[in-house]
Each structure stands twice: as structure tokens, then as C-alpha cells.
Image 1 (cartoon, rainbow, N blue to C red):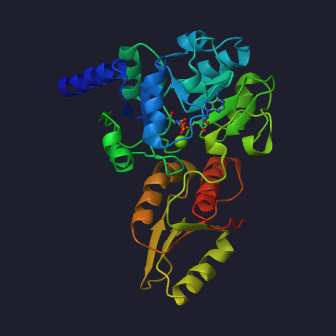
Image 2: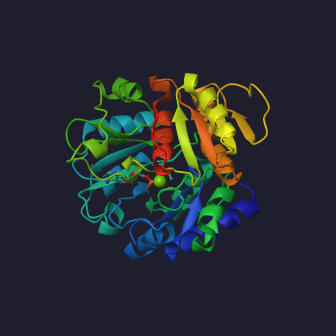
Image 3: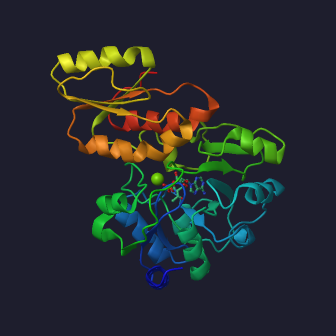
Length: 332
Ligand code: TXA
Ligand code: MG
């Protein structure tokens, strides 16, 4: 490892030990980290993000060997999933070990655990030696950051240090599976699908959305309006996209389009992003693109809705929330 990077890591560890916040890259999105065993440090996360204090945080670990230090009554399925997918974009919700601070769990009896798949995050966790509580490093309800520059734009001085690990390779947040209540339930879709999980544990998880299930733990990512740009965003089925573009331009609006095909014609006031046609490539670029379009000064962002297949499920979920949070109606 380069000397400059080592010095940066040493500083990050020092800050975490002193109860300060450090933002760091993961393979999904950037996290805003604090010492998970220090309630005062964890409290700073909520202040920096303007996040309601009862929303629980994910504890990031260096390896699956620490599961039992943070969780109790761990079912076999958890060890199997950890062995199959960690380090990787999967968060396990388990009954918490007794010493896990309420500040981390929002006072619930469960804790979210994940080993991120990023060399810088893993080096930080290994050197720190404890759990790092970290939500996505954005202001509450806004688009998650996938570069160090996004973190600075979101949080500025509220964070002591941002470790720059380049753009996040997955680009959307981890899959969350709740293993605390018997039947596994997917609380947030992500790059690891229900089929991936089912192959490992030998049973299909339920696809519960916390909003529809009164007994589900609170997941702020399950609020209808999350991951939202400030500009109005509408999600439209392919056949309604171009008519909507024409109508908005005719009404004198400046329009940005996020589609999976090239711009069909030029027009004043029309911005066009042709996104990758594959789900992985699309997810990698999604948040940076939404952020760029949000800042481009248009009146309206129109997004071609993805097809309703398993591959596109997590992306469709994030786009629906983006549409909802931006104040526009969902149209699909
Ligand atoms: O990919 C990710 O998961 C990223 C990176 C940084 O690891 N983190 C992330 O954290 O997305 P956050 O806080 O923005 O979203 C995590 C979600 C929240 O909606 C939170 O409510 C939920 O996980 N969560 C955390 N602990 C939980 C628990 N004990 N029970 C239910 N949901 C939980
Ligand atoms: Mg978040």
C-alpha cells in the first residue's frame, strides 16, 4: 500500500477512536462511519445526516468471524449467507448482542451487519479492529453518494475525513435480508437477488416491504420517498416516454431524459442521457446520473421505467422512490 494511503488510513483510525466521523467507500455506496461501540460518536451521524434518531444503522465488520460479537441466536442461514456473499452487498438483520448500543439499533432488538467488498473499507475495518456503524453518506432522504466528491457535496464540514476509493462499483445499496423472525424476508432489494439467497439457504425468502408489514423492523430505505432528487422526477413506461417529452417541451419546460436508447431528435431545452442497457452498468451510473441531472437546472426529469424482471428489481425500486420523493406521481 502506498505511504500516503497508509497515513490516510492511520488518520481515519485515529479519528474513529476519538469518536469522530469518517466517510469511506464501499462497493455499494459511500458510508458515513463512526465507532459502533461509542454512542456519542454514533449520535454525530444522525446530526450530520439530519436523520431521525430511531432509524437503525448497519454495523460494518472486517469479517464474518465477528458476527457473534454483534448478534445472538444467529440462525444457520446467516452463517451460510455470510460465507457465500461476504465481503459483498448483503446486509443481515439479526437479533442484537446485548452490548450493541441503542443508538445503533434505534432501540430495536435487532442489528444490521455487513462486510463490505472494498479494499479500503476492509483495510480500515481491519486496522480499526471494531465495528463501524455507517449509513449512506448523504443527507436524509437524498441520493446516496457513489464518489468522494458526492460525499463532500452532501455533508461538507460535517465529516472529519473522506477516504477516496474511487467510484463505487455496484452503485446501489446492499440487499437487506431479515433473519431475526424465522422466515427470511428481503427488506430492501439489491445486487444480491432473492434467487441468489434461495440457492444458498435452500428456501425462497419472502419479499416483504417494511411499509406493508406492521411487524417488520424499521428500514428508512423502505420509506416511499427515499433516494430522491430535488427536481421533479417522473417514471414512465417506454411507450409513454416520448409523448411526455413532447408535451413538456411544448409547455415550455426544460426536460432531462434518462432512457436506455439514444436521443431520437434534438430540441432546445432537452437533455438526454442514454444509460447502459444492462442492469449492472445502469446501477453503476444511476446515482451519479441522477445527481448530475438534478444539478443541470431542468424543470423535469423523465425516466424510462425498466422492465419488470428480477434483474431490474432493485433499480426499479430506487427509481420509484426517487419519483415519489421528488413530489411527482408514480406512473407505472
Ligand atoms: O449498501 C449499504 O447498505 C450502504 C453501505 C454504506 O454499506 N449502507 C446503507 O445504509 O445503505 P443506510 O443507513 O443508508 O441504509 C440501511 C438501511 C436503513 O434503511 C436502515 O433502516 C436499515 O438498513 N437497517 C439497519 N439496521 C436495521 C435493523 N436492525 N432492522 C431493520 N433495518 C435496519
Ligand atoms: Mg441511505
